[in-house]
Amino acid sequence: MPERVEPLVLGSWPTPLEPAPRLSVKLGLLPSDLWIKRDDLTGLGGGGNKVRKLQYTCAVALAKGATTLITCGAAQSNNARLTAAAGAHLGLDVVLVLAGGPHGPTTGNLALDELFGATVVWAGDADDIEMDVRAKEISGELRHRGVVAEVLPYGGSSVEGARGYADCGRELVVQAPDLEHLVVAVGSGGTMAGLIHVLGATKVLGVHTGAVADPLGRIQGLLDGLADRARSEDHAQIRLDLEQVGDGYSHLTPRVGEALRLAARTEGIVLDPIYTGRALAGLQTAVAQGEVRPGQRTVLLHSGGLPGLFGHPDFGSVARSR
Image 1: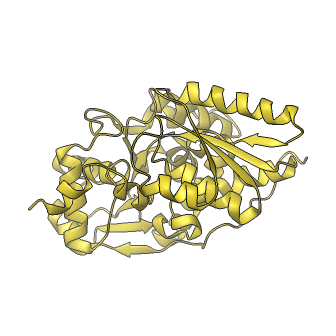
Image 2: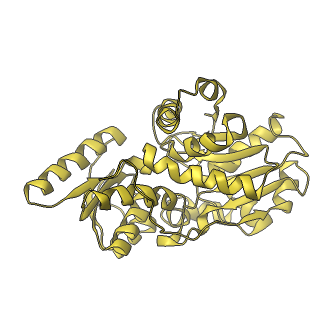
C-alpha cells in the first residue's frame, strides 16, 4: 500500500459559502459580517462534515483490501450514519459500535443507519476509548473468519481524516480571503485540526461539545501528525470555548435551544442540538465578550447533523418555544 493514498470523491465540492445578514444583525454584528459554510450540503447520506474525512479514511481502507468498515460513536452519531452511507456507496459491509442499548425508538441517525444496511452492536455505558476497544475486538473476530475489516476512528478523527478539513480550509482561502474568525463545533477534534493546519490557530474558534474528555489534547496531537514539523506556536494559540457543554454531550442547554431557534427564524437554517447549535451559542458568547467584533468577516461552519435533531428527545419543546 502506498504511504499516502489519493482520497475518494464521496461528496460535492466546494460547498457553498452563504451570507447570513439577519442572523448577523441579531448577534450584534454588521449585516455583511457573518457567512455560513454549508458543509451540511456535502451530499452523501444526508450530508455533513464527516464526508470529507471519509474520503480519506475509506481510501486507506480500500487500499488495504478491506471489505468491512467498523466505527463507533453515540447512538445518534453523524459519523456512524455517514460511515454506513459510505459503505453502501462503496459496496462494503459496515458494523457500528454505538453507546447505549436498543431500548428507545429507532429515530434520527439510528433509523438511517439501519436504512443503509449497517449492523449495530450496542456497547452499553461506554466512553469513546472503551468503544474503540470493542471495535478492535470485533475486527479481530472478523479477521479469524477471513474478513478484512478496517476500524475507522471515533468521529473520523485521525490524521488522515483531518486532511479532509485541510481541504475545507483551502476552499475558504479562496471563498473568504479576508476571513478573521471561523467558528466550528469540536467533537473528536479532526475538523478543527484540519482547519487550523491551513488557516492557522488564531482564525479558528472551536466550541467544545463534550464528546471527548480532552479536546485540546486531541487537536494538538492531530496537528502534530499533520505538520511537517512541530507547530508549538499553533498549540499555544488554540482558541477553544469549553463553556457550552452544560450537563453533557447529549443534553440540550437553554442557550443552545435559543441558538437553534435564532438560526431557524432569521435565516431558515436548521442546526442540530449537539454540534452546530453549540457552535452558534459559542459565537454568541464570543460576540458578547468582544472576541468577535462588528466589521470582522466571520464564518460559522455548518457541519450538518440534521437527522440527529429528529432523534433528540427535546426537539419538540425547542420547536414550539417562543
